[in-house]
Image 1 (cartoon, rainbow, N blue to C red):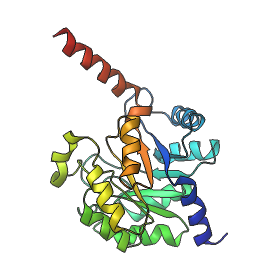
Image 2: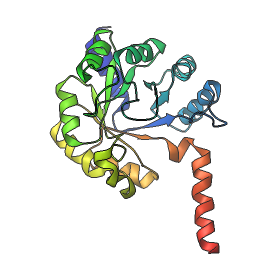
Image 3: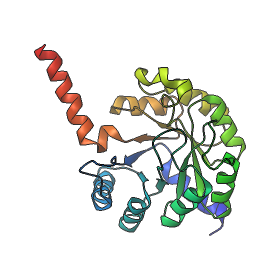
Image 4: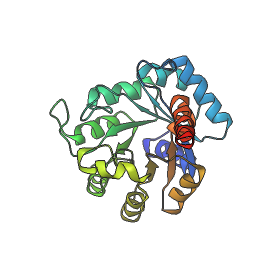
Length: 234
């Protein structure tokens, strides 16, 4: 299968669908590759068309368990550019079994001092696809120009320049603006907490929608319920 045919096959399976992000943070009780594998299988059973997963062991475990399109990433660090921050990280994620490598495509400096283009070119040369996680319109346009196969709104609200957006729910304005401007698929991701918001993202032009916390993070879901009840009790 040619690279072009493979790309078309993967992307066609994701059009207008739900991708479920199966991630747990370090130190949490669910932070275990086999647990994430089971979560991914449950998401598939519920109708997810793709999975997004973090960490090489998680990517391998999920890849072995199912054949849905798999978006992989490697978080290294906790500040600045830490989502698949270098070409080394990106190629390792691809080798672990991801179809699509998600990486930070913001305009912040990368830890190895190299450019975003280096990582994108490395993944594509190795036969993989790239999902560029961005925070702004300008970053999305630039990532597409550099060859990213998909652009995601993942980091809107999570960079210093966009922090004010975090309290406003999903950045559907950014989704719509990028979808109108780009020829590559735009993936809505970030703070999508309800089925209604996911449907609205499609209405704004999203090619696909990623939902994580609201489906796969019981600690946060429990806190949402507890806090609402605490407010009622006064």
